[in-house]
Length: 513
Image 1 (cartoon, one colour):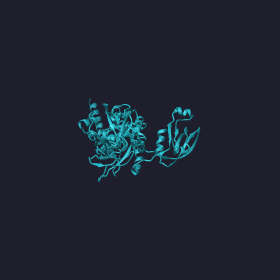
Image 2 (cartoon, rainbow, N blue to C red; image 1 turned 45 degrees about the vertical axis):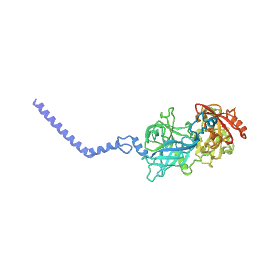
Image 3 (cartoon, rainbow, N blue to C red; image 1 turned 135 degrees about the vertical axis):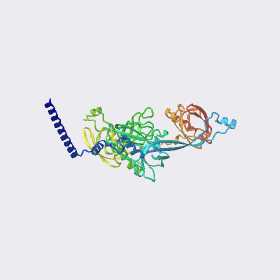
Image 4 (tube, one colour; image 1 turned 60 degrees about the vertical axis):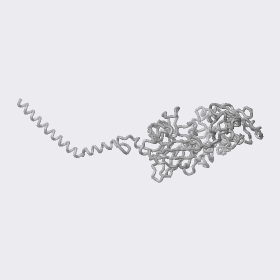
C-alpha cells in the first residue's frame, strides 16, 4: 500500500512536470506566430467583407439603388390638340325647329384637348442628356409631345428639349439645362450578360399613384428576343430584347435595367400581359444598342441605316434540303426589288447569302441587323451561293427609308372633299375609333372650318349613310353621288348616324351656305 502511494505520488509529479513543459512550449509557439486577438479579427473581417461599400448587413441591391436611383427621372409628355365642337346634339337642332321657334343653333366652339404620356428615363452624361423610349415622348403614336418635362430625384423640374429619336429601336434622347452638378449612370456591357444573372429595374410605375423611383428585382430570363408585337404602339423594326422577370409596369418605360454591380444593361421598354400589369415577362432594349444609336441621335437627331432592297428569309431544314445545302446557315433571297442596291449589284431571287462584309450570316434577323448597322454608301462584299457555287458580289449600300417618314399621319384626300367634308369608308375598327355605331357608309374624318358642313353642325366621327336620298356604302359610292352634285346650287340632304347609340338626323347642305 505504501509502495503504491509512493508510485502514485511519483506519477503525479511526472505528469505535472510534463504539463508545465507543454504550456511553456505552447506560449513560445504562439508568440512566434503572433496569433493575437486583433490579428484574428482582421483576418475574419477580410473573409466576410461584402462585395459593395456599406454595412455587411446590407443587401447588394441597396448599393444598386444608392448608385443608380439619383439619375433616374420622371418624364411627362403633354400633347395639345385643337378642334371645334358643338355643345351637344339635340333632336331639335334642325332648320325646321329653328325657323318655327326662332331657335338659334349653338355656335361651334374651339376647344383644346390635352393628353399626357408618363414614363421614365435616366441621365447618362453630366451635360444633362437623358435616355428614354421613343414611345414615352410620342404616347405610342407618330407625333412628338408639345411639352416635355423632366423631374429629377430631388423633385426639381426642367423643360426638356428633344435631341433626337429613333422609332426603329424605340430610343429617344432628351436634354435638360441644369445649373448644378447632375448625377448620371454608368453603362455596362449587355453583350456579356447571361441568363440567370440578377436584373434590377428602376422607374416610375403607375405614375398616377406617385410611386417614383421604384426598384424591383428579378433575373435575366432570356436574351435576343425578336419578332415581338406591341399592340397600338409603333413596333420597333430592330429588336434584340433582354427578357426579365423583374417587375416592369406602366410608367417604367424608359427606365434603366441594371446589373448587380449597378451598371445599366438595358432600357425598360415593354411587357407582355393579358391584364395590363406585370406578369413576369418584361423586355428591355440592350444598352449596347443604345450606345450605337445615341451618338448619331446626339449629332443629327436621326439615325441612318444601310439598305439592300431584298426580302431575306430564314433557311429552314426543309428549304436547305430542297436546295441541296449542307446546313441552314445564311439567308435565302426571296425577292429583289427593282432598282435597289441589291438589284444593281446582281443579286437574284434564290441566292443564298453566306457572308456580309466578312461576317458569317446565321439567320434573317441577324442579317437585317448587319445591314442596318452598316453606313449608307459603304461598299460591302457579299458571299453568295448560287447554283451550288459561291461567288463574291460587291454592293454599294443605300439608305433605308426612315420610319419617321413612313409613319407620317395620313393627309386628307382633297378629291374626297365636298361641302367641306373629308371621309373614309366605314369599317368596324374605324367606327370603334370614332365612337359611332357601325353601319355601311362613310365616316367623316375632317370638317373644314367655315364650310357648309361645319356651319350646319356635321362633326368628325359622324357616319353618312345617304346623300341626296341615295344610299352611300363606301368612299366610291359617296364620290359618285357627290361628284354629280358639285355644280348644283340647290340644298342637298345628308343622313347622318351619330354616336354609339346610333342617333340619326338629316342635314340640308347648300354650296352657297
